[in-house]
Length: 138
Image (cartoon, rainbow, N blue to C red):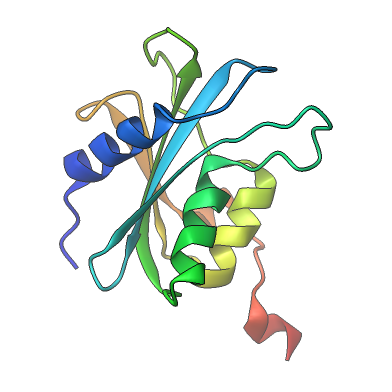
């Protein structure tokens, strides 16, 4: 599958605009590319009790799975403090890595971007070397 990295990164930046971050003030956007070419976006949504807080990556994943999509090729993730320009890459947290592994496995491409042209990418298996999924529980 051909991946338009710049378009995926742009979609993640657009999603980040909707982040609700009154506590950390760190806004994250994600754009998840399904194998069928559809893109699902998400942003982080904080909560005063913290536990119900959801990361951008899992918000995008929940949107996709709730619409019946369960196979993915790539995800772009961007993050920065409110009102600031990205100066470092934002990688998925451990919980998001495991959630993404469930549907993407080792080969899901993770694009961590500062901008459309300045990014790092790794297969999820490098970010979560001992990840496990449904096959491991059979």
